[in-house]
Figure 1: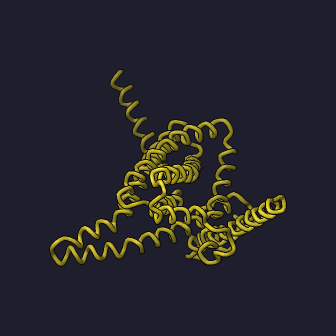
Figure 2: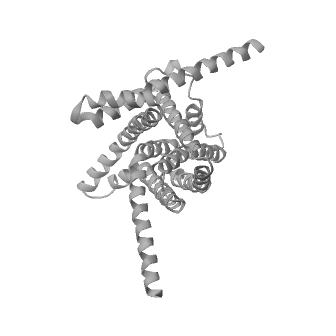
Figure 3: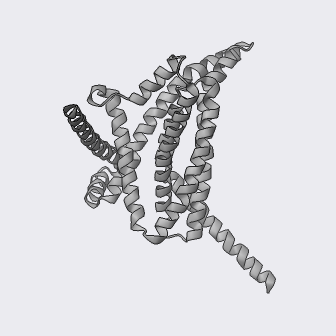
Length: 307
């Protein structure tokens, strides 16, 4: 009897783990776009740090990311258990944030005069160029900023993952979110550490004896900035595809409109759907950027008038 009970328990555990594995894969696919942006953003965050401080900064941000997820996972599960519709609302807010950030990047790139100056980027360049600046204090501020950004992106990933596990038991949802949170943090910051050190590895190989090593080193050194640029572009596109997809799926008339248009393209339906999601995401993001820019100018004008 005890043996039969044990076998039943093992079978139940096996079924749960199998379900968790499937849901984790689905969640990972749905969060892939955000992960691409997370990777690009974090690699960019440490790009202005001194070479000998890159890995310590990445480790500090990674620890902050783990703490973020220790807060976010239980909070998401609690919200889902108490009031599930709030998860959908938070997901839509996350979608708006993604398309806003993406549109702001595009506008800064192609129409820089349309938006205020990127004061943080300018401060980072000035700090690295000025030997009198306390780089330790500046680095701490940079780490705090990166952790805040990670919190927002991590919240988006957790909510998307939770949405993909909707209808599952609390235990299954907990396992899916926990596995994904740990894997994502290790994967993202491990890749960031590798990416920011590609140029250093290339320089090291260029100094070695042997034509093959030197040639490989030159390729790696030349590829590093191109890889960073590619990640930045891919991450921005992912913002529109993922954020736009979330918003379209959450707004009925947009969802049905996109489905009807995409259905007309036949075998290219999935590609058309993704492209339409991205275009709609950019339009919504650009509108939000315009609204915030106008509000900022009005506030700036009010302050000037007050003085």
